[in-house]
Length: 267
Length: 300
Image (cartoon, rainbow over all chains, first blue to last red; front, side, top):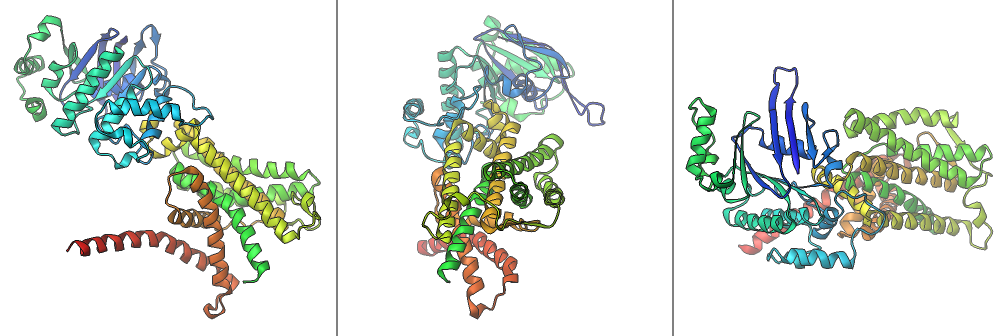
């Protein structure tokens, strides 16, 4: 379970460029829930994810995983509970290490690296088996350098890596945004499989309204660092992309035009 | 080249092979260009020579020289990590400070080790001429050092260090503490270089405040020569290739200095070094350009 209480994050505090990125987020996500997070650029979606992951320090407010207060815990200390996949396919893997070396790193996530060999035949069997789930033929390329793989392949491996080590929370930050539609669909399929299989608590940031409604069981929209609406259950099931857009315009209250084409065009 | 000169070249080549492995750790593994080695090589030599002259045990003295080198690396890492000083600049600051520290450690510009015991003493008089024995001793040190580093880089901890140099964000997202890996890497690198300095002082019989000048260039040359000859991803091959690169570099330098028709003097060493390193850097680039050109012509 993730619980955010009155979360505030301010960048460049006290400077002319001061930015109130998060302005009092109260959000409780029960274990096993899959939440999609939407909002226009600068709404604070990525900031929220990065704050939960520990990359960004909170200015005010607290974060709990279950009963544990993790507000003061640095990012590396939270990796036992959190797995992440980034938007940039190059960000989640090391380009000049091999596929198996990258997987070995993910296999040791949240543990202290020991002085035993990072790779052995037993691990290779596990990695091969996992890679074969992707049907991309990567199970025969364990020793290929990660940098030689395509963006889609790298993102697929990142996704598998996030599930190699048991964790309770998965943070997906627009993880299909940089991919072509076909690869994006494949990645989304694998994500759903892994999430269902491991019963993960998930937060997925997306720019696509369609994706936000089709996946998960709850949709949260952020605007100017606040949660402006929170859709669940039957109400959400009846929603269409169109309704979501209307709701968005209404919540903003000023009839301002949507400036983000992606919100409208997202398939 | 005479046999005597050749053995001398091998001996220096093996010692600087250790430097090359240290340079490989920082430049290639951690992506941290570290010029501290110019100072830590001398520091290792100075500390070891001073302790030996003061009557300390030679192994203890060598260990102290190695640890002193490691500490120099920690200072550079601290300046960079704690105060965000650019890595290159942080290492130049440490290197500059070390020049004075080395003079203070020795109390004079150089310390001679003639007639003093060294780590080589137990092996003298075993029937093998000294000049062979020295080469074998430093060869064993360098190869054992290379294998230990290769083993380390293949462990979970070592792999985490390689991840830090490759993609910090990914490393962090997988729970790797980046700063710790940089500290350990720089200490290890400069410790190896300090050890090389300690060996150099004992095999050559002196420590001198200027002996470290250009260490970084020599180390880098060895790494580049080694890597362009053995294109491998295996840490074992890479570690050994650093030593091979170092020896080849030394042979190239002594051939250049000994070729009468070139008319070089010993004082031309730095120019030869710079030209050799530049060539080693230019060659792989030219080779790939030629290959690309030929591929285009073949497709016509």
